Amino acid sequence: MLISRINRSYGFDWVAVNDRYVSNKGYATANIFISCVDSVKSRMEINDAIKSNSRKYSNDDTNKFYWIDCGNSAKSGQIYIGTTGNIKQPKSNEFETVADLGTAIYNFFGLTDDPEEPTCSVAESLGKQDLCINKTIAVYCGHILWTMLREFRITHKGMYINLNTLITNPINL
Image 1: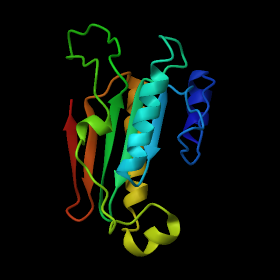
Image 2: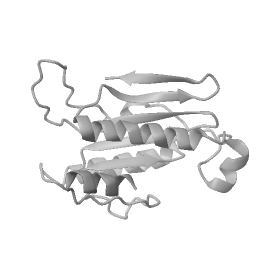
Image 3: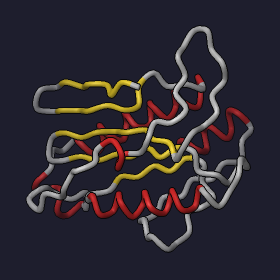
Image 4: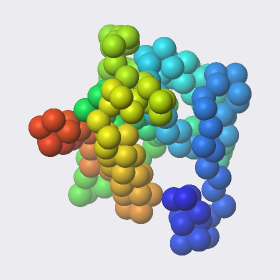
């Protein structure tokens, strides 16, 4: 698991929770929240929970700072890195820093669920989704997270992936 490797490499004591999201379960102790959900409704629930929980804490290590939202359709998908509000950034002469990236809800406002789109459930997706779309999204998400943690910066706030055209497009800051 990626978190175990990071812990060993950097001496951290991070915990990863691989679990189905339940709105009242209390995920209030994570600094980074990664979601891979099928519906706008699920994203709205996550957004509400993250915003609600992030107001309960100050600048301690239990505050949610980043929400990485992953999603896909049959042959395309997106990864979006959002923030729960302003995050103080260090001064940089090399880069323009951005304190608030917004969330997936803010940046994809107006999206609706398509009942014809396949879900990520294994049984349903096997017949409707491209074999590699979920894995492709996961690999790119892992790379973005790794870059964030290793270089302490991002140069884009996500990306779009299209397996039909074999094109990936960054989402600029």
